[in-house]
Length: 145
Image (tube, rainbow, N blue to C red; front, side):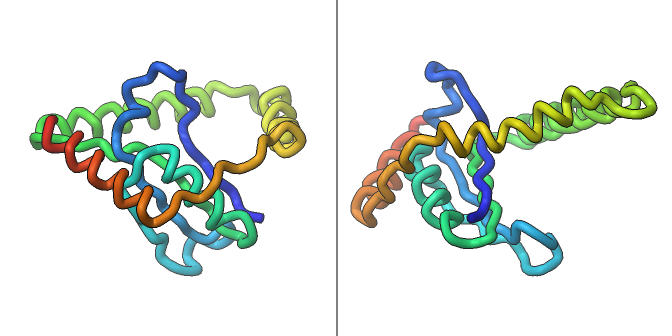
């Protein structure tokens, strides 16, 4: 079984209505082969397709929103936000105790076990017709932006 990674968003997040992409790569050595990027999809379709792909293989699927930027300034803003987040994470790691924060490690180790036990049935994989209909809705969304 592989792994699926995505954002945990509140039900009212405007990001949920954006188009989403799936990036699938090897679960082990990232130099094994180049990841494959597919999409855009509506989020429920992206999640169901990604889950179906990683269900029986040692793959990592990342489902993330596609941020349609209309200008170089918007792209620069997204880059700056990402860089700031990385700097914050690096500062948090550097500020950690010499021997680390074992509570964080224990929490991280317990989460996957709990997630597997409480995991609901995966959503049904969308049909080709459903995915194509989603493409049409995404095109309308992008035209309206």
